[in-house]
Length: 475
Image 1 (cartoon, one colour):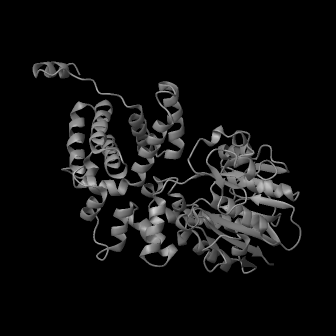
Image 2: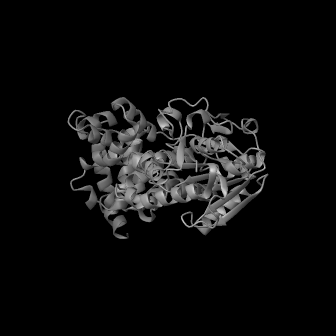
Image 3: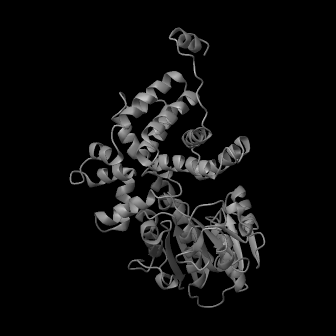
């Protein structure tokens, strides 16, 4: 470090220390956490924002700074595939040979140049200053040279150069243009069906920042109460949903702080509502959430069960997640029980419940709007790892419900291997079951397909791509 000022004085130019930009340093730290620790941006970013506000002060680091930092992190992660294709044309070696911290800085710069309205000069200079702070002056020169090449064209111009023609390779074209791995494009296209327009709308929706959606837990809060918040509008489909159209901090809302309301995607709400409204033969006294963590659906189910005087048992295998479920259910107006138990090895007698929900672990391909990094972490072989668990949980659920009761099989993935294939296999093994048409249980929701199961979509419904099949035990 001591040599740099001497060289600068020899050339007649005094050494200038780099300017520390808290917004871009925060974005860089978030990307490093995602890369190094396999962290999720939606979990890493909030504490980093709080730390920045505390360190810099609300006057120095205000709401606009927080919004820019959030956009830089999420935008860079969503468009990582596209930016990698562009950077590959601007770097003199394979990207895998570029140090990951350097690549993160380059990606941040590429997003500012190609994905925001930040002026070109400001985008390059701010990113080079970031590089000087976190990488050093030597590698900052490399960043500067690469970004000046990126700045020579806009996003559309770059896509014409780096994406293969659609007619030559449709899936690879869509993968580059819409920044999804090729295998994910193929899987989503198969699940959605139809032609190019539909899958492009879906891929575009995956790259949009979702609104924050709240749920007013029945008996504890109302949607009308939440609608008094700034920029709050009624949900599209769920009677308990309220959308915050301008983002905002849910923790600042009294009903959320008190646990009377929570953050919950509207698709998740619809799954709980459909199961609660499914017709039964016989009593309706005991409900089970067999995969309850972290507690969003359990809290809504518990409130709906309480309206009927029913007991909810919320089961979660991992102890710390069972604690989250207990926290979400704290204050529920009706009876409930939270247990730490393996859903494939139940701690209850067969046929004990009238309604059972299993929202099974999955690849999460239905929530790529909220967790954009998941698309780059998942591999096709992950499907094989989830398959035995998904089938085991559904098998236990079918054994746990009484004759005449209903099981809801749900997953936040539209992949056919995690949805209809699982249900079809278990129906073959359990001939004493049949499918309930879930569509009438979601009145007003369009484009639900041929049924009897339901697949929600970001581009059609504004929700995560939740899947639901309702299965009745008949004998």
